[in-house]
Image 1: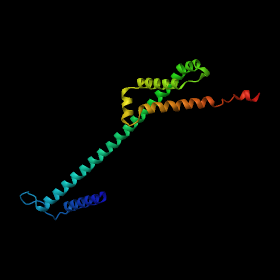
Image 2: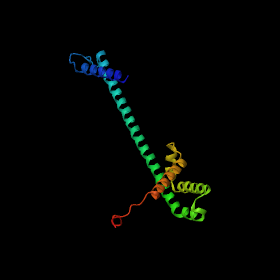
Image 3: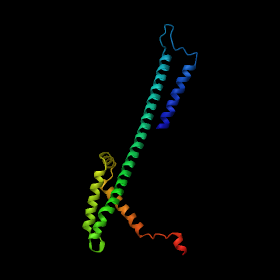
Image 4: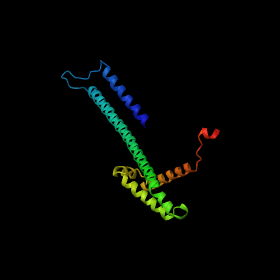
Length: 178
């Protein structure tokens, strides 16, 4: 369909240019009024001009829409990374302040499922309070579940912490040689 339209537009433009460039064609009468050929040429040129103008406007609208979509995606990405960063910071704060005391107060140094649920609830509330309303709205408008995002990021952060605590720490080279 686009190829056919482009072909027809090219034919119309060629016809209009050829008709305007032929000096033998009389486009005006002696009194200054247009002849039939002059009217056809003027109408064709006017139509071509309007079609080109409409195509240019449509292309500009398409480009602006694409630019707007790109900016929207950047805003969503920035909002999600902000949520993830605040979640990591809050999880680390809870780890340093509350979790150590809870583990010390429990037999065997293990948290109960109730403790874990309470910590998760606290984390959700603290992170939501730290986030500004605009960030929350952008994340929710993007279709993401804010609670699931916070919970998932916290679990990923805690898993990274656990993997670091289980990894053997290599001894400095000076101690290895002795």
